[in-house]
Image 1 (cartoon, rainbow, N blue to C red):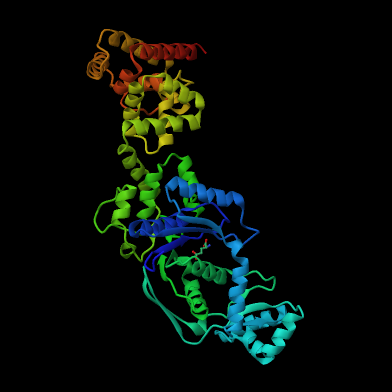
Image 2: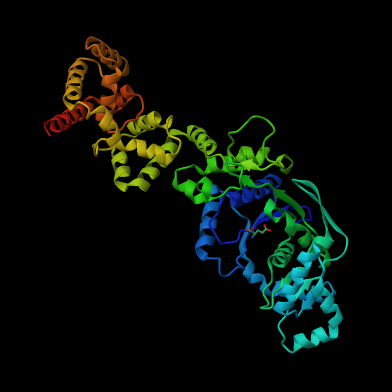
Length: 487
Ligand code: GLU
């Protein structure tokens, strides 16, 4: 490793699934190091034993692999660094940059109340530690008396040049003498993160805005431990369409939910990159390599960005359209299998060119692979029935009349070439002769052929089904209508 190598990390806590905010943070880190030929470290911050789980760790790793966010080192687990964390605390004690706090819970409570009242930090625990003196403090610790260890926040001001937000300044007098080691000898977040980031040689810390108030504490810890301070960049929050912080109220926030919906990983990648970063021109559709090329931290904005699912779906359509027929066929087969392995088998029985024709027909309307697979269902096997709502409108008002219309249409179509244009003119001419609008024929025909109220253009559907299958479906609908008419 040379001095100049950029080393970043993604440090999720496995207390939940990989959510879009976390994935976006990971992605900005990843783009930066792929651009600068740096190193991406993955660290699982599993110190909150109660809320962390292996299941969540697995889900986070899965989500990152799905997005293509590969890491160069790790996953490391924060819990494994416990002894180093304690050693760093011991060092701070030795240097006089930390002190033991033997306060009783009642004293701690009274301190809090007094600070609230005063509206400023009073540092009573520090006063008590200083009054006790180092020797007595050492003696009580040696005797096994429980205590926490607090960081002695120095006077002055903490300033850094944030990669995203520019100069940030905090007055140290506002920062609490934070606990760095609890009385059960476990380290707290700020200490563990500084110890780990230093140990892993992290040069740039890019993370969510919600960590901004931790940064001055961490900088002061680095300085007190005489360690190099990394660069920091805080990425603004992601908001829901109503301008409030993105939450489950706005829909799925777990990346895995979008995978299940059939969003392509490259579409999600593209979408996440645009949440806070912009290329500076009006381009929106980017492949991963194009993003690596175009990305820079300078173009990460200071304003929060809005999570707009419609845009994700649009991008997904754009990425679907960029796929080669072979790729898209493979993805559609996978999506069919997720729905029902029998559907995949039915599709594989067909001529691949026919499947490609089906995909071409459906993909313009489909926004996700699952959507496309769903629309493919009526083409891959016998109809399982008719959509009830559409049937109530198109079939049931007057079943006998609809059956008669479909029969007339079938007779008219029997004489034409099975191609879009002649079928369309025949249908229109038939409607005109009968003094009816074309819709009176088209809507029941769509229901007869697909079982659904919506489909691609009905003449394209007929061509794809072929004459025999289309005629069989029309006959089946007529029988169905006659049965309904009898009851
Ligand atoms: N584990 C922290 C979190 O998930 C991130 C810590 C950091 O990036 O410094 O919020």
